[in-house]
Image 1 (cartoon, rainbow, N blue to C red):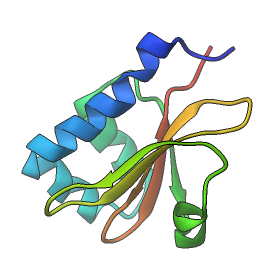
Image 2 (image 1 turned 180 degrees about the horizontal axis):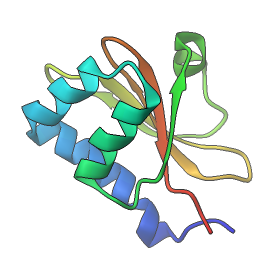
Image 3 (image 1 turned 180 degrees about the vertical axis):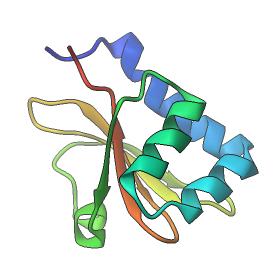
Image 4 (image 1 turned 90 degrees about the vertical axis):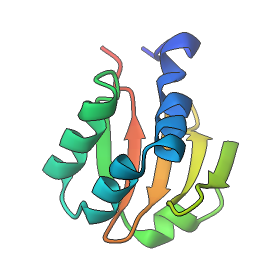
Length: 106
């Protein structure tokens, strides 16, 4: 079951937090494992429950459905994409690893 459009707004809010909070950007740039990634993400928004480390080729290949993208000043490039028939996903390219973040549905 997909999450609501309202719930999906947590992902753009997470991007906004990255824009405004150097500490969160620094923490993400130090992440190299899934457990630390989950801790950093959950410290910002507990509704963001899905997380994965992804290879650079996956983080940079053209998405089928691009919703939004950008580069944060002194921070990571990011993009929001819609998986076909699936959730809205935020992908980040950080210093030590690349991530996908989403909201898991029940």
